[in-house]
Image 1 (spheres, rainbow, N blue to C red):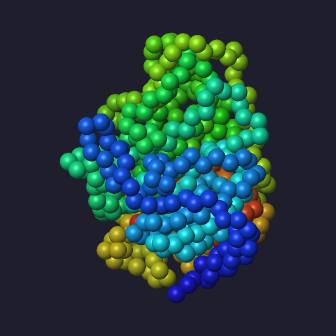
Image 2 (image 1 turned 90 degrees about the horizontal axis):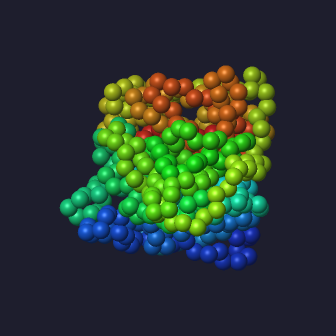
Image 3 (image 1 turned 180 degrees about the vertical axis):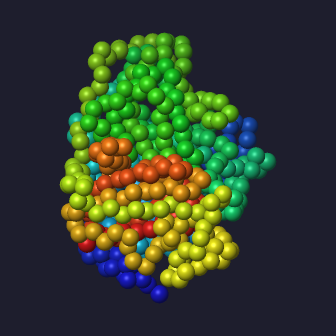
Length: 455
């Protein structure tokens, strides 16, 4: 049976069909191929990839321009593509069951949308995401500014991890209960741009723009940039009002992005490095071989131009929805609503459902917020679980509120630690039915997702 919200989404998609039919868009093919993920000396791995690449092709488009891609599904399973962080037409958001039907094997779907914001974004499968993203269906999406910052190199660093059987270098099985009920599927191999031990050449004094994207299913990356004098310029594609000098470690939850400008301070013949800090120590994720010949800048970088995101109105009068993050190992679920009925925990666990949002497992029948277009809304996310959650809002960017209630930076994904409450505020100005879910993808699969509506 087709749900009312999916029927409405399908109707919206039909409304844009004449525009899409004017010219056949470029094809983005989702298929099966092999890639060398593991270090030299190990075998390659069967992956699912866009255009036979890991990561998928680097899609670049100017701010305000259209991006059109016909996604051809040559996989043996259904799929769909979500354009993460783009404030997009609802029918193009790529969420099966909410904004479109999944693309069947052998079929295609035309995505066509305007890119209103400049910045670092990405695209990935949104059908059985833990497995499909975990097998490789992801790629960078860069929306360029009218006036790019003055840098010598502009580099994307897509951070990822993979769980491979070291004997065969094929994927370890997906979806075990421990992953679903604990921290998620954490890999045993980390790559940058699909490469183990990624390296690039730079010159001493060069100014680099580094676009970090956390494309992992569950791993939180904590980065230390060495031999680089660094400023944070943007979070999740949204420029900061002023560059923030980095004298701290960068943290990226799954789905988050950080743009930095970094001056190479390591001398010629040395290495500048991006080091991942783990509980068992730190190790180099990416290295820059430094040669002579660069010219150092004397001044800090200038802030990037802001994107046209509406500023929230009076927060004190804005509706507040309190969303409790519940369940998981070491906490467990109580009786929760699932598929329209109150369900006992043991019955939920039998269906591999371990997480809930305010007593609801998976999408409730009605939206948790039904917003009039243009209204400001607040959400307080209360993490009652034993694990962190990277909560991602589709269709909008939001301000993370400071401890004193002031507007913090714009983001589309916020990390909520165990026992922590994070409050966000946004202007609901993009009509449609939108997903809100944990971007630890196993958590979303196991129940931690909901939806809201903008009328």
